[in-house]
Length: 409
Image (cartoon, rainbow, N blue to C red; front, side, top):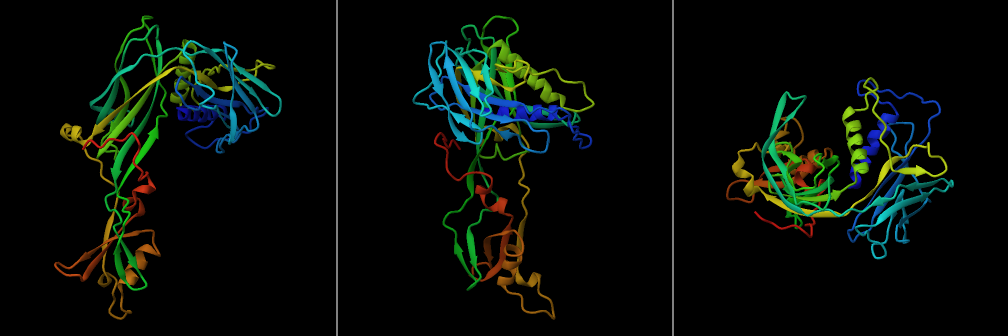
């Protein structure tokens, strides 16, 4: 979830520094003020909640500076207070044992910086949220490159049950998929004695996860609370990644938000889509719900989010994809087979297997993955090499199976 905020904050920083996508432009802004950036969410989940504090900087090519040594706490309308622990790098966390959000309560965020500036959020109600009824997918296509090309894949949809009086929603998701590398490293070569031995921990299959950074919001303009049907959440282009080759899973979280928060996300989404071009029309201000109590004119970036949450997970095995006649993803991997005679010259020294190995694995960034032998013999015919990312899945994922994972294929 917090990733959404991080991307959005970067967009706002780009707007404030007036960057252009045509040529680099870094004006020296007179009277520049560093703005406080607040990114936080509390829900009714039994977990630690995080508030991240940083400040914008004048140079658009530098990461925002973190705000450390602040005092951060949350109060509710029942007189309770929850202090957040400073864990460093501008991150402050609640204690999951001492504090959990309760539906129906109003929560207020309080921040005091080490310079003595005090910031307070508007009181935010924690609204109930209905259950997610179902998550499903269907074959689809998406236009890219300004509508000149299309990509085939699947769209993931959500149905939600009707809530009490819910009219505004936000969604976030985390996707996880199992994948394999095309040329896993299965053997080692020892230059000391030219021996070849098997690898015991072959890193062929791994899992990779990603949190959403899109702004996914919904408004029921009829004014009547009701169920949500076939709400598009995410499109996966089949030939652009290895997500759908073995098994894919998506966890969707559903939040019920206020009209004020909906307007915040809607405005921020439009700012994102504007691109921050210096020659484009000036974007309207994105209003935060956090204020400096001694200087109400000071602008603060970000939003203190409060919502109950419901979540649901769906698995999509390859067996349910294969019949859709979608294009397959092809790994950009090169498999190299080499032998001494490939490099032997008539007048040169004798080329050995050690030389071939060193050529690829010592002087170049390749892995020796396996040998090839002459048919029916133990005589080495070729050595096979691959790039590291094509031979070791841990370079882009984790070999540790997630606790929630269920193999369906």
